[in-house]
Length: 94
Image 1 (cartoon, one colour):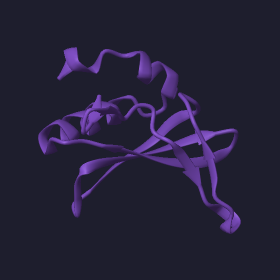
Image 2 (cartoon, rainbow, N blue to C red):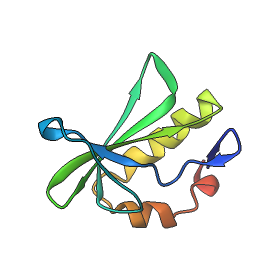
Image 3 (tube, rainbow, N blue to C red):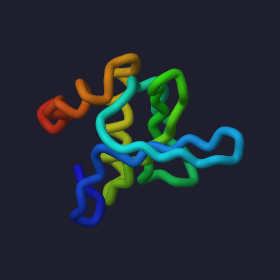
C-alpha cells in the first residue's frame, strides 16, 4: 500500500498521554480500532495497544474507495497483531 508512491505501512504510532508525545515504529501491538473520519475520507486511523498503552497511526491513501475497502478489511482483523496483519496479502481479498 502506498500514498503518492511512498509506502504507508506500517504507520508511525503516536501516544500523547501526560502531554508527552511518544512515537514508536514497526509492526507492533495489536489492533483495537479502525476509524474513518468523514472529513478526512482518504485517511484510515488505527488504534493499537502496545505494552498496555494505546497508540494511534494513520494510513493515507490516494483513492477514497480503496481507503474504505482497506478500513473494512482491517476492521475484520481487530484483535490481531499488527505483525500478522502486515503479513497478509490484502490485495487478493479486495
